[in-house]
Amino acid sequence: MASTKRDLLIDTAQGLFYQHGFRATGIDTILAESGVAKKTLYNHFKSKEDLIVACLYRRDQQLLALLENSIEHLAPQQKCQPQFARIMAFFDALDSWINSDNFFGCMFINASAEYHQADNPVHIACTEHKNLVIKLIEQQLSELALTQPLETAKQLAILADGAIVGAHTTNDSASAKHAKAVAEVLLNSFAQAA
Amino acid sequence: MASTKRDLLIDTAQGLFYQHGFRATGIDTILAESGVAKKTLYNHFKSKEDLIVACLYRRDQQLLALLENSIEHLAPQQKCQPQFARIMAFFDALDSWINSDNFFGCMFINASAEYHQADNPVHIACTEHKNLVIKLIEQQLSELALTQPLETAKQLAILADGAIVGAHTTNDSASAKHAKAVAEVLLNSFAQAA
DNA sequence: AGCAAAGTAAACAAGTCTGTCTACTTTCCA
DNA sequence: TGGAAAGTAGACAGACTTGTTTACTTTGCT
Image (cartoon, rainbow over all chains, first blue to last red; front, side, top):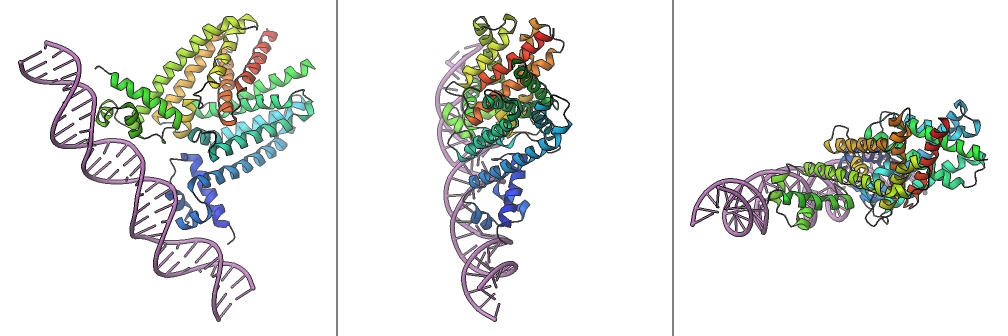
């Protein structure tokens, strides 16, 4: 049986944590929905917090893979300057996620909101994820040969996070489109400067 | 005694909710810190959720007043084009808040993260607050005579929220400065177009 | 001075939570 | 085929939750 129960637990917990929140989701709910025994859960994870961190790491991997995939897929369809296409595609990917059925904000932002001591393992997992997203964005900027690509990546990440939060708190379905427009203005400003 | 106990409860609860989260903060903790009896609390508020909403409304008023005040104060010091000064001052206000001692992200974003059903009173309070901030930003744009000031205000709000989230999750103390730089690029693009 | 409103203290109900433990069963592999 | 590893079911401990209630005290107003 290897670790299929472990996977099942993470998958189930991830969905529940995302949809209802971390403290709001009890262990018993996860067990009921997954059909796994309590002892099995505590055999795989030493605590609920341990399970939360495992969920975040899986989500991190899934999300980064999805973003890379979407960028690859959506970049050719962009009508902007070709060297901006991958960044524009990134915001399109964000847009379709935000407007999908099961959008409840960013799981990492939500987790940070519930566990915001900087030394908490949950918070650390969130920090690491956000830094990986910044790195992903930075990679999409390589064609532009910017003088400070990391700074620009951070600015684009701010736009992305802002769009996610805006969509979540004000139910604004156009937030990713707004962010995309700002991103294009930003990138254009570098092109003009060069 | 009027409603001074009510005020004391809101003040105490607000601090604890902001610092430790909403579900993580128990009624008993609020009572212990405020020194108020449980019956008095339930005399003023029909439930914990009711108290949370009251805290959010007070915070909303405090925050908007603080922002308006800071803009007034910081705008004259800006070195940008004078018609951008109030927006630039807004991001400076954000920057000093983010880098102050007691920064634990945006209380409304945190609340939305814990209560994210759209019809939840807590979530509604967050939505209202964010819309008021957008309106505040829009007012600062009046000198620019933009064709779509509300859209621009939403874009600037996205930058602000992104900066707050970035500072909170990645402990990046420069996030408001990054957002400010993007905001200036955005406003410049309108100036050029005109 | 006296009464009503508001507050206190603490017990209580009834439910939730995480995590442990025991006894039994299934699964896998050699 | 047999034994170890992994899983199940469910009871249990112990702590914590929100919210109610009772009996008593303080406060403020007329």
